[in-house]
Image (cartoon, rainbow, N blue to C red; front, top):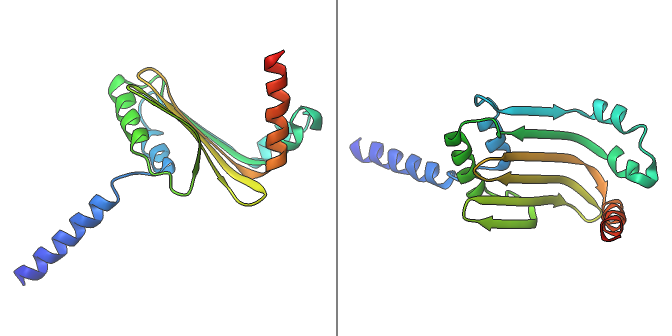
Length: 161
């Protein structure tokens, strides 16, 4: 009986250790109720209303392909909460996301991750954390890769002029 109990406890400890890194959704859920945290979830219906007036030539086509946006901002949280968030971001599991941009400095983490299939970007996740500002933005939808490329090209041209 003691051997069986010891085996079960050991197995549970191993499983807990394997699950120590969290996904970005886990991190959003963990921190969104912290004192000073601001969490917003913008559903598809509100996005449709907001994007209706955007001309296709100005990214309206891309904007209308977004299904939801979730934003977590911890800038008004205590320093200990922001430090904990910074550690979580540093150790987060990409969980099917492909890194697009990633910077890792001593006290700053920035990651832009995408989840895409052959023709569409399904999800974009932007996580940024330093000692003062901490945010995660999650954008979901069915965004055509060519629309993303067009918006990037148009904006690079505007920036370089």
